[in-house]
Length: 258
Image 1 (cartoon, rainbow, N blue to C red):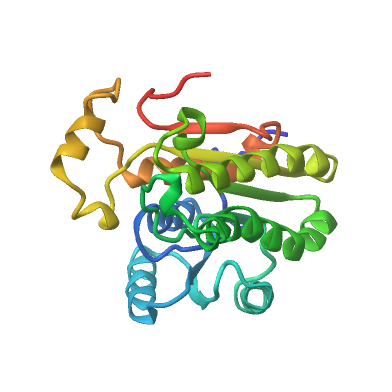
Image 2: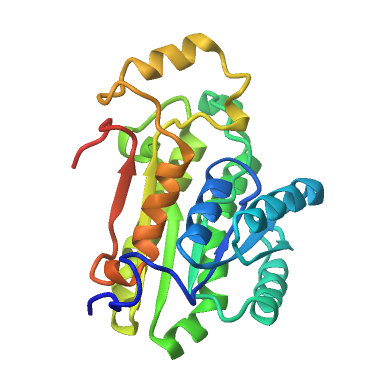
């Protein structure tokens, strides 16, 4: 089905999007890009209401209809309450971008405890499961839904020493691939965006030597910017991407090719 002649390609006008962990970094950029494409945007935060309100002001200054919703993205009760509040405030949810993440330290496996492994699994397998289970009844009824998981190039590259994060991202990728088959008959797509290292606020104090080493491996010869992840999400969220499901779109300057 082609785009309406009255709307530009990839328009999200009339859609409602939830982006978890969307007050900083890639999540914030994605929320802005979805909003600039016409979607109403639910900004999710877990801890900092001040930062959430600053993000909300930025979106509204850009002419985007948006609001903020507090929830732990790994909590069943929190997800349920958040989605209900979004539906009451902005309308039925058509698009969810699973982006929230905990700290990601690199450690040899001997230094990880199982609790840390479990935290990774909670964010990258449990969270998409909880969001999908809550949102699917409405998406199936409307025969339209877009589930977008922010994964990572680390799964495809097997980065070490990073086993907990890489394993959880592998679980998220496998879940997405299975769900794409399950949900395709209902008009719902499930895709992944796998960013490389794109400098955002949390990378401010990373060692310069690490940054230089990574930069030297980027075929395009430049850093990516957060909006490039956001615009990838806009495409996958659009009507025009309705025949694209179960795919991983790498946004890393060519570091992974498959």
